[in-house]
Length: 155
Image (cartoon, rainbow, N blue to C red; front, top):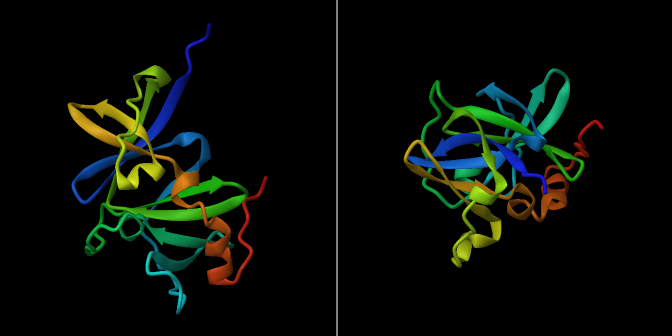
């Protein structure tokens, strides 16, 4: 029997720690100029031209229903690929990448937001919410439809 390990990117939003699986993470960049797209969902910040590739950018803070804040020098954009779509996620800061054994992931509690919570883990004496990106953006094709461009990840 093999032990499954998870690599997670730990990041912060609103003084809480979150994590996503590194499997879909392509890069992490500093906050850049984002071109707003009118009449889209409030959490869609706009599009980013990253080395010639147009990427929709989502404010994860807004997507999670958290209060807004002003971006600062710690704000980052995590570029991810999932289900053939490349998206940028704005977060308050990125801490580090950790490796943990899958069995140490605590099951998500039965709460209203549990649909996108893959589980919980401990990191430096803090509880970290592990986000299931696919569940969080279940309507991912709706993101593309709202922005009006076909931004699909290069395979």
